Image (cartoon, rainbow, N blue to C red; front, top):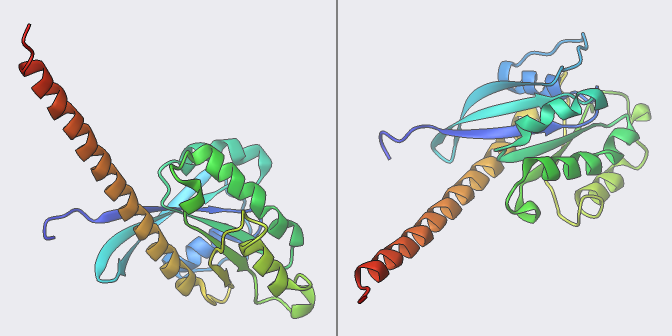
Length: 213
């Protein structure tokens, strides 16, 4: 529709400190990578204009702190999210195992209406490293994480390199599609609730005007 405001999609990136959340965001938005690591304090975000199935949308990507002492600061930024990216380091098995905790924390704090249907993606970052440094049996463990480990749901999985830009664009294209579907679903539910409330109000009005006291 012409004149319709551009859709804003909010995406949250969660995961342990040092897995590359900031680097992924910077690579996708600015095509930049820095070797210098600087921990995120609280939360930060970048935006990027993208087109999904011919529809222009603005992706607002939130990079949140991975350290425990900063997690409480990020809670307020979870609200209103349309998609959540769970990120781990392919050389650090603990960061993979912790994805369950990040997912559960997000669902508790974000207060999403339908947790079972909310879109998540798993990204395993740093695939540019030597294979000898990667998690042993990674493909099988990733499959388990996508299905059994995270509530029995099959989440899309991407292995990326923020350093070399491998699969970063492709991953965020899928993220954008998932976020748009979620946003459109929320709009549909809101419209349905509005119609339902309007119907109730109309019936109440008719009841009052037809009262024979």
